[in-house]
Length: 404
Image: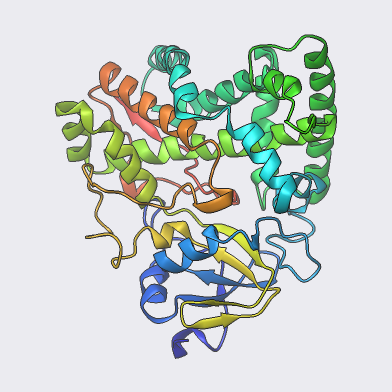
């Protein structure tokens, strides 16, 4: 380990000089200390991985637990402002062993590329409607408020068969459960109780009248051994879909548009060649300064040149790994036509993001609609003045001011 980082742990999460820039520490860590000690918001210590090969190794290994429920696991946030990491629900969905191997395919079979592509017309229609409302509002306008935030919650609520009138409640629940600093643990627990009560009643209603949606399909699904998902499993399944499918996609939508408009030559290139939308989305995912996800090591493991003991909490920084020059040529450049692009934004291995096909469809559809409807779109503030959304486990921008 480099002497630069031996004396004391770095503070995590780290931030760049501006909301769109990566932390300056990442490059130095990759070169000198790819397995570094960090202090979490809770005050506990963990290990941060910043090299591509190391991050991929840990994410791919099913022995490394995705839920920090062991007594010696580091807490991500403190007991007062813990968000989803300090709730019982976060530990209920099976993450290891046979139960996880059974649960994941039952849910994952709904999120195929084909099924998600079939949702595209509806997503496009909603995006068109939201752009109409933003245009009626007039510029400058906040793209996050008018488009990036409401669209994915509409999509997830549609998957869960949630009535349109209840979608605002889901927006609040998603924000409260993912925020590490804005809400006290008491407020998070209240939010959790509200969500569970709502979903429990919703599952009962769906059992009586299953619909053509994911929840309806899971209620009807029967495994070869006769297993059906219990009510609690169904209730708990909705939460990761809400959290992963709403807030993360909302933030990535805003950041993707901001990254493209920060250097408007990128936007002009997409206008000239819309076929680049698909690789441009992949490049935005790669270059995003995502803070990373935790894993708990259940046994002694060698990562890079460092041996980590069992009981170590590891933070896999996909954002840092995605800028590893050893894997990506000119890694700090945003190349809209980068091919291949083996980024780790959705993770890899047994816990890779189930909703990656849906996220891609949403991001691509939003760009297609904006390029067609608002070709003159530009940031209404300087890129360096964009403000970071503090406290969220997944990062983001507080607003994305645009005009056209």
